[in-house]
Length: 145
Image (cartoon, rainbow, N blue to C red; front, side, top):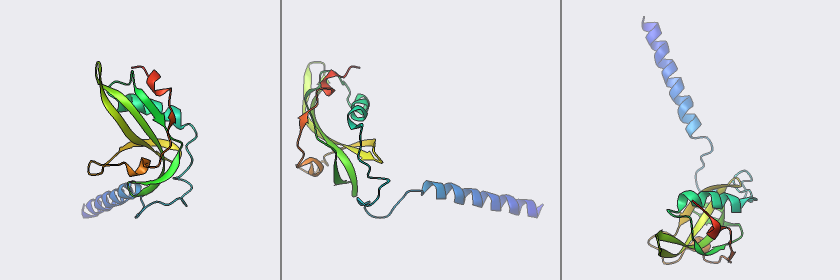
């Protein structure tokens, strides 16, 4: 009976080690650099990816005004080098009221959309998008619910 308990205990420990080892896969200490070809792949279909994500990001995706988009660029964001695409837009906050122009960065990992990053509250400018050159983004105002 003691041998069975010992084996179960050892199997439980082994399972925990494997589980925790799987969680740490891909984790790195320190900033990720441009040298990592698996992480920093130029996003090819970034416009459709961003449009799809905007449906969830905006409370009301219809009637967006002043939409602009930048080309993908490698920038440091959150302590890591990632491809980002800067967006500028004025979205509705209520039926006939607009929130004002907002600037966000779409962050890409391995060529795929990962998340939106916003200007930190303690900063007056958004460093990641400070030198962005915006082109019109006519697809954004055409979003529907």
